[in-house]
Length: 113
Length: 277
Image 1 (cartoon, each protein chain N blue to C red):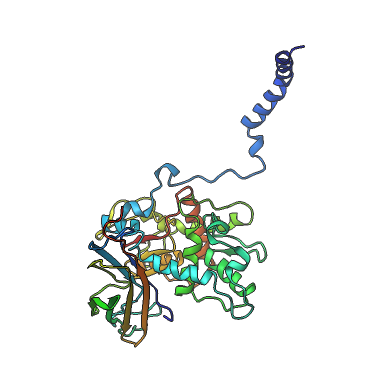
Image 2: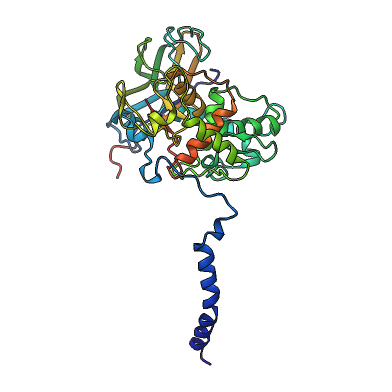
């Protein structure tokens, strides 16, 4: 796979101090190494070795999924929203292919109407 | 003469003409030139999407617009839609414009006869035809992520619209071949499609409820495959399930069978992006 896609989602309206749920969907085959392709050839193991989410300067989520995780994994975690910052998601798989996604997470001031 | 009187006279005079028209319709003269619509072994009122037979968790995953994994391929597809070809700089969008408007309803009509070649095309064939002829790019391999992205994107433009394939004219022979294939026993299990999907839907095959085999969710994200796949791939799985010899990729009989399935499910709304077990 030359291009990797990922999607990230959080509530539309986030106030400073809120604890929000972040959802992350990553496109990856997560091949266990035990399955065959459509032509009957064994597909070598290729799973995401490590995935990190950095929000602003701070690492907020890290996971090392093994072959027990399904393809195109969905991750959910909670962060305390402080101020508008960029979420930076990075991952590396067994083949050394890296993927990344950057998206701004807007946070409104605490006293917003 | 008043206006009302005038209208009354016209109605009086046109009455015999109306009677003749009514007799012509009732007597069957109107149908003499078009073949009668074929009988349906599964009445339209009983049609149920595969979603009906899916488990609650699968239904929830399909309904979740974020977590539905087919969305990843849709993102890939919308990127490919505007990607210029290396050969002549044309993208899908340069001819077709926005996918949501230009491709609306297109997927409900496939498989269909290609006017230029006279062959029966499914949607993937049509996309590949466009790619090779107008973008002068190599055709996509079956089930490649790039092709699935585009076919999902094009099909999604018809989301909610009823299936309505044309089985008249040149397509009629293909429809007939598909109908025959559907009710023909084959493979080591000696089963026909109809035995499971017409006569026993709702019953269990091992642990899974049998569906009606409706095509309105394709290309579908299947949890078993861990990725989306075309209707052709699903049909191949069924062939493997009844231990029949699987036709080669691109085989005409798969398109004929797909045409029959689309006609059989006429009126069911397109569900893409759909998820199945």
